[in-house]
Length: 113
Image 1 (cartoon, rainbow, N blue to C red):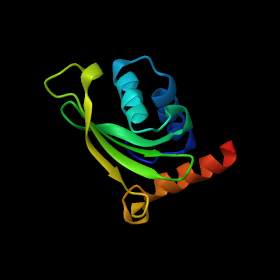
Image 2: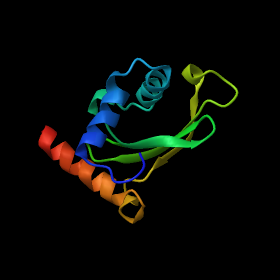
Image 3: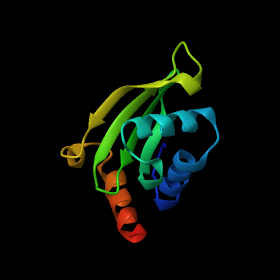
Image 4: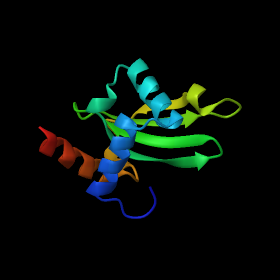
């Protein structure tokens, strides 16, 4: 999401990840499940188009693990897209440009307990 992101934006993104029937979100949910991550326990920190038919995203787990992903559906239907990038940034997110978003997401985790 462009610009300043607040808690409501994070809640909206997370709801899309957890509940949307759009093929993009259904497929991203399936791929997280394949990584043994339950979408209903994730916070979607950020997700945006980063190129044609490519989505960049970051998720936070309830265990405070942080993963960065690149979802591509180039040359295929979005419902058959794959994670071309998957990176555990749990130990490095503090130095990332997404630090403030992740910090806000961590606070949301605490309020969900």
